[in-house]
Length: 140
Image (tube, rainbow, N blue to C red):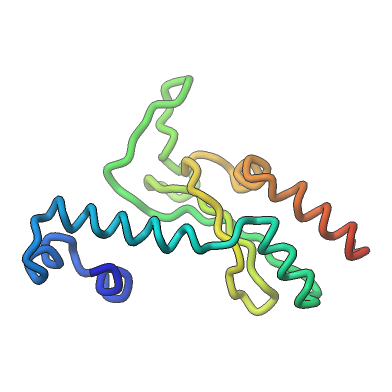
């Protein structure tokens, strides 16, 4: 169920039918599987230590707003937190730390799409962590 959902984007209603499940059970199984997969992902400190041990010359930090629908929440001033004015759609802001060849070694939890990449990076401690490891490696 989880592999089909990841690989070909099969709708949960179809996966439920194919596996003789109710739609609510399919959602439950999907989220249980995603939780198990997420538990195996390294935290930021571990990912940076592995990069350091691998002797990488640099890391790339990039943020992206992943398009979504059915998400809306008013912020403190009434503006929708999940609306990205830059991208003109609702979405979640995700930060990615990648190796020089682009392989992701860490992905942040999602933040509201309205937030700027730098704000998200600071929220997740990326700026401090990357500065700290750069100092340890005597990199600019």
